[in-house]
Amino acid sequence: MELFKKPNIDFIGLRWIPIGASVVVMVLSVATMTIKGFNYSIEFTGGSLVQVSFPASSKVDVDGVRKALEAAGVSSEIQSVQGERPTFILREKGTDTAAVDAFVTKILDALRKSYAGVEPNLDRKDVIGPVVGKDLRRRTVWAILLSLLGIVVYVAYRFENPIWAIAGVLALFHDVIGVSGLFSFLGLPMDLLIVTALLTIAGYSISDTIVIFDRMREKLRTTRGIPLAELIDSSINETLSRTIITVLTVQIVSLVLLFAGGPVLRNFALAMVVGNLLGTYSSIAVAAPLVYEYQTRFGGRRHK
Image 1: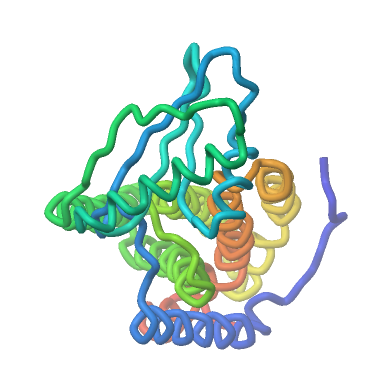
Image 2: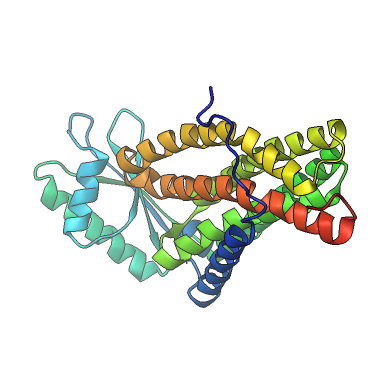
């Protein structure tokens, strides 16, 4: 299946436009993260966890609980738990005992008001201390760094050139930074589910990049005398349909989750939609042009 019949786009000739746009995105994202920071969830900052349940015969669902709490001015993460009774876990920032008790009271009062005649039961009330939050944050940073290191080693080994690996990682780093900057700017919660989305984005991004690099390597071995710019352009154009089809497949699922997945999956889906677009863009317009710049300036390879 081909979406484009023999495209002939001069990606290398136009390379400074997307590279410049990428630099702007990264600078703005880093500035936003530095100035504004992140809205960390309780996994990172510490907080309270409250579990409430209703009688098995009651008709209570997570959407109803969310509306009841919003009507009472309570903004909290809500998760439905499968079981014999309607059970829900609510998370809120803050570890002060008095604040947690007030939070529990407000929840129960709001649920009693919305579900008259059905008494909610407080199953448990836990506090996640800031020490746990710091440990999770440290582990998250190490998970991302080790993932990037693994990608560098793999690409460098596969293509026998560390420069190609560095270009690929810079491209996916651009994607992760772009999504992180968006979440910082919008003040959306940064939780472990979003960290999962960032690592998934990195995986998709490097996968697209490897497809293009593989075609470039094949042409380097089988062609002689062709300028490097032409070789890279033809490699990107020949894999363009495959790249677009891949991104569309992922985007369809991500868009369905964004608009129909509910509040729990909305932020994850948003990260996937934006990150997938950035990943495809960087694979086409950033990674390969960076290889070209290095090879022509420092590598002594075939010039235009």
